[in-house]
Image 1 (tube, rainbow, N blue to C red):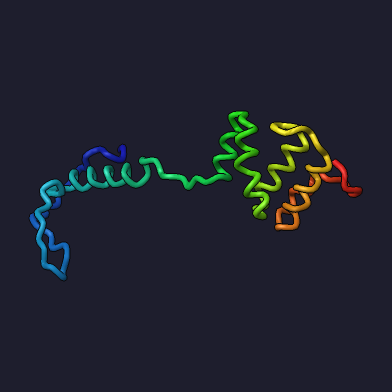
Image 2: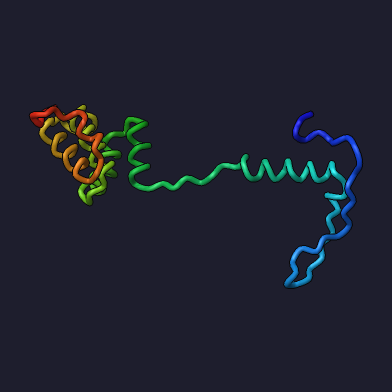
Length: 137
């Protein structure tokens, strides 16, 4: 039986339901007058809770990632640079990668290592993976 199929068996009858004890408000529950209505309501609740898009928090870091993903490296760098200078470890790691690969900026291994080290100092240890033991890429 599918989730929204009508049930077989007895029906449940609800005429009125007392909802709020503080105000003693009474509501007529016409749609839930039988088990089929209750199942329909459950289906609607499921769709409302799980079927609607959820807003995602977006900020300069996420906007920079979106720009980078669409290969707009200049915009990504412009969004990430202020964050990196303020000590944001992910932005520092991203700038290190941009300088390492030359995407949006001239390739500069020394600059890449500097940003990778700053990111690692902020707790982003994976930022040091591209850096060798002697401090080069």
